[in-house]
Amino acid sequence: MFSCDYHIHTQLSGCADNEFSIEKIIQIQQERGIEAIGITDHDYSYQSKVKRIQAAREAIKEADPSIEVHFGVESQMLEYQVTSINIRLASYFDYVLMAPNHYHLRGVAQPRSFRDPRRVALHEIYMFEAAIACPITDAVVHPFLLSPDVFQFSTDELTAFAQEMMRNIEQKRLIYQLDLASQRGLGIEISPKMARYNQHHLIEFYQLCLERDVKLLIGSDAHNAKQLEELSLLTPILEELGITDEHLWHPRA
Image (cartoon, rainbow, N blue to C red):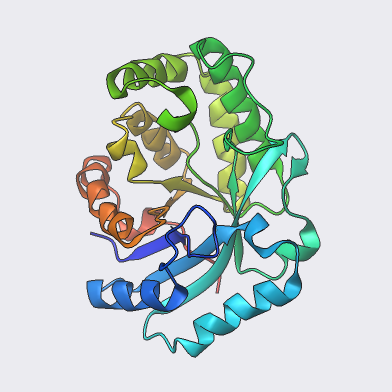
C-alpha cells in the first residue's frame, strides 16, 4: 500500500462532512501511517478570496503535522480554454487538480446525451484534451470515470455503459494526449472510486498511461473519514498494474 493521498476535501468543501477539518484529516492520516497528503478543496470553497486561502494554509501550519502536507485545489474545465479558477488564484496553491467531467456543477459543458456511449466518449476525450492543454493543470482527476449520480444507471448498467464508452475512445487521439501529459509532467489520478463503482474499464487506460510514461496520482477524493480508508480498495489494482513508486506523481517541492 502506498503512503500518499493527494486528493482530500475538508469541511470547507460544501460536499464534505461538517466535522472533516484539516486538523482531523492530518491526525487520521498520521495514525494510519500515511507519509504525504494533499488538502484539495474545491476552488469555489474560497469564494475567490485570498484571505480564505491564506487562512486554510495557516490551519495546516498550526496543526504542526509530522507528515508532509501539501496545499492544493480542485478546479474544473467548464469548456475548452475556460476553467473555474484563474491563474492569479491558482498561484496561491502548491498544485491544481483539474476535473474534466464535473457534470453535476453549473457551467460545465455536458455531453449531448447521457444515454449514448459514443457521444459521451467524444465529450470525455474532448474535455480530457482541454484539461491537458490548460496551462494551470498539474494533474487531471478522475478522467473517464462515470458518476452513478450523474448517469442514473444501476451499478451493472453503468459498468457496461462505461466499457462501451471506453471502446469508443479513439486510441490515437488518447495516446497523443498522454504523450503531452508525459512531456508536461502532469499526473493522472487513479481513484478508489473505480473500484467502488466497478468501473474496471479504466485498467486498460492506466496500463496505457504507464506505457506512455505518465505518472499516476493516488487520490482518495475523500469527503469524510470513512472514504480515507477506501484508498485500500486500490491495493489489488495497483498490484495488478505493477505500480511502483517510480510510477507515481508527487507535487513539486
